[in-house]
Image (cartoon, rainbow over all chains, first blue to last red; front, side, top):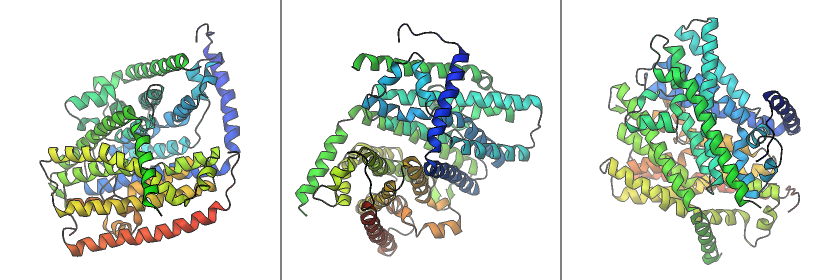
Length: 270
Length: 269
C-alpha cells in the first residue's frame, strides 16, 4: 500500500465507468441468471409486502404509526437499501476471495483496493427493488397528503443518500470480519436480516438497546431518523438533522475497518 | 446399509463444525441481538393493539413462537444449494457421485453432524433462555417428546425441499436467484417470519396443506400445545401431514435427481 499514487476523483469516476461497462457485458451473457435473479428479487419484495399487510390486518397501528406512515417508512427503507445492493454487492464475495487467496490480485493494482474491489460488481437486480420502493413511497406520499415542492424533494434525496450510507457501512464492516474470523458468512447473513427491522419506527426500542440500535448497529438510521425530516417537518429530532454527518462518519469508519483487514491480509499472505 | 458408515459421516460433520469456534460464538451473539429486535417489535405491536390475545396468540405465545422459529431456522439451515452449485462449478461433485453410496443419502448424513452441533450450540441455549424469561411458559411434559419427533420430521422435509431446489443447480448457474426464491417462500409460508395464526382465513386454509408448514409451524404448534395438539386427535393430522409430505417429496426428489444427474456436464474436476 505504501507509495500508492494519489489520484483525483475524475480518474476514479472514469475508471468506475470502464469497470462497470465490462461487468455489464459479462452479465449480459448470462441472460437466464439475470431473469431468475430479478424474479427472486421481486419475490423477496412481494413476500416482505405480504408480511407487512398481514401484520396490519391484525394490528392497525404500531406505536402510533398508522398504515400509510408505516408504508412510507417501508418504501423509504427499500430505496435507501438500493445502493448497498447495487454498488456494494461484491462484499458478499470477499470471504471466498480471502480464503482462496485470489484477493491478492486487488492489492497489486495502483488504485485504492477498496474502490477496485467494490467497483468490480454492479448488481442490476437491485433496480427492481428501487422501482418497488419508489412506487410504495409515491403511493403513501399521496395518501398522507405531503406537499410536492422543490425543497422537499431535495431534502428527500439528501436524506435517502444519508440513510443508504448507514447500511453500506454495516455491510462493509460485516464483510470485513472475514479477515479475522472464519465462517464469517453468518455475520453478513444476520446483518442483512437486521435490515428487515429498519422499516419499523425506532421509537419501539428503549433503554440500552435504543443506544445499541442507534449508534452501534445503526438500523434506526436506515429509515426512521432520516424519514422524520419529511414526515414530521415541524419537530425534527436532533439526530435526524445530524444524520448526514453521522452517515459519513459511519461510512468512513467502516472503510477504515475494511482497510485494516486488508493490511492484516498483506501481512499473513505470501 | 451399515449404520456405522452413516455415523462416521455424522462424526466428520460434527468435527468440521466445531472447528469454527469463534464463528459460532459470534453467531450466537448476533442471534441474541436479533431476538432482542423481535422482542421490541412485538412488544410495541401488542402494546398498541390494546388487547392481550390476538387470533388465539398472546404476546408470550408469539414471542416463544418467533424466537424458537428463528433458532429452528438456524438449526435447520443447510447450505445444500450453495454447496451443490459450488461443487458443480469446481467439479468436486464427480468425487461425491463416485462414492459407493447413493448421493442423496451421502449428502443427508454429511449434514447430520452440523445439525447435531447447531442443535446443542444454538437451539438448546435459546430454549433455556426462553424458559427463564417466560418463567416456564412452555409446558414440560409429553409435548417435548412429540416436539422432538416432529422436529426430526421437519428436518427431513426441509432436507427434501433443499435437495429438490439444489437439483435445479444442474440446469442453471443462477444460484443466488434459486436460493432466494426458495428461502422467501419457505420463510413466509412456514410461519417463520409471521406466525400462521395471524394469516387471513382464506390464505391459511391453503397454506396449512403445503409442505412448508411442516418445517416450522407444526413443531412449534405442538410445543406450545395450540390448535388441539395436546390431544391425540389433534396431534395425528399434524404428524400425518409431515409424513405424507416426506413420502411425496422424497419420491419426487429422488426421481428428479436421478433424471437430472444423467444430464450433468462438469467442466474440469
